[in-house]
Length: 380
Image (cartoon, rainbow, N blue to C red; front, side, top):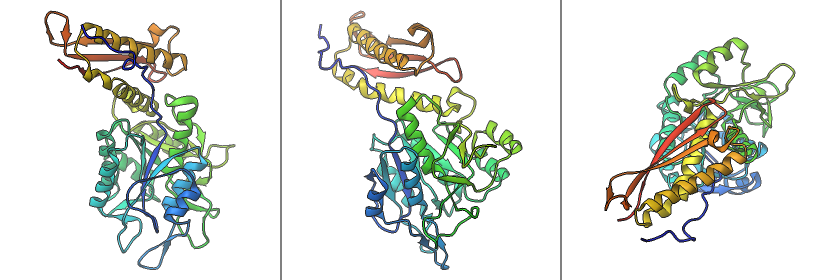
């Protein structure tokens, strides 16, 4: 019987989940996605904070610059920037086909786990934009979209937008945040202390920072947004009580606290454990780790020994996750369960060419075992 070599039987490792991808309009720079690791590097390639001129002479805030600055200010370390071509009339409006092509160009990038399009608009409306981002994440392993509402929308309009979106692969945040104006000519909605910008870039930085410590299993909520002076509009208890249960994550300025705080962590899913941002992203993290860590299985001959080794490797990985505090339970048996069920076999039980890997993990929210499975295939 063929056996698994020591080189192939390497421990499964979790993959970093904090790299973001931003799509937006810039005054210069390449249109293909390129990595950026600091605001000065972004400015060298895509231009500074100067506003974007509209056909009627108005000067709009440079939303992409503000998003990148907010990302790094809030703990982000690496972002792929994709410059989009804007329409001649409005620098914030982009062609839907061009946006779809840009998203297609990101699909092969396995490093990216967070996706934002801060300040981008489509002539078809905001819901089709959000839908494009969500469908992209559903096609791409481990990716999650941070969505903004449009500027100056009311709570009723935010609820209406939410009802048009359905996916556990993204989260919607409302309202926009007020930040310091980068240039005197920049104009936009907001209070007298600054201008209003979409929050997704800042939030991606918070996500990235939370992923590093305490970890991707922790919801990025009840946190202050660095660089936010306040909100485009206040969210009272009544509006919050109606928006939060629907899955609209509100940004608030609570009494006694300055600036803006993240006050929700729900996805746009419906009726499952995946409704929670932390649950969804942690399960995506686990599945991606298993997908990469078990690639060697396809080159192995199917056998009972193979599936026993798979079970052992996955159990070892989840044991480390439990010891790091990502899983609940006083014992490892309470924290996770792993089963590898061989499928159709040849020669008795000796050559099972396919198996179903079933995993259950105990998460803080919703305080119950969450189960998922994946199919594995070995060679004949």
